[in-house]
Image (cartoon, rainbow, N blue to C red):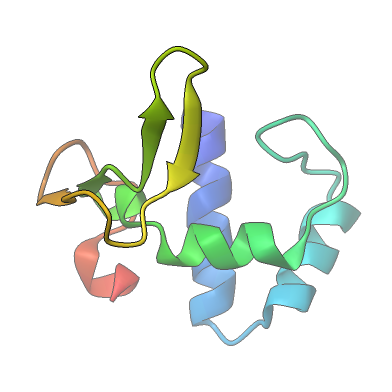
Length: 101
C-alpha cells in the first residue's frame, strides 16, 4: 500500500505543478508504473477520478453507489435516491486537505 500512496502523491504533485492529465499519463506509462489493477495503460478518466476522490484526503462519502437488489447484489450510482453521509477524517490521509482543495 505505501507504494500506491507514493503514486497517488506523485500524480497530485505533477498535476498541482502544472502538468495536464495527458502529461501525467505519459510520465506514468514511460516510467512503467502500473495502475492499481495491474494494467500498463492509464486512462484520463482514472486520473480525473483520483483527483476528485475525497478518500485521498482522509474523508469518506458513504453510499456513492447503493444496492438496489440484495438478492442479485445489483448496485447503481446514487443520484439522490438514498441519503449519503460525509465523514471527515475517517482514515489517514494521503494528500493534505489544503492540497486536495
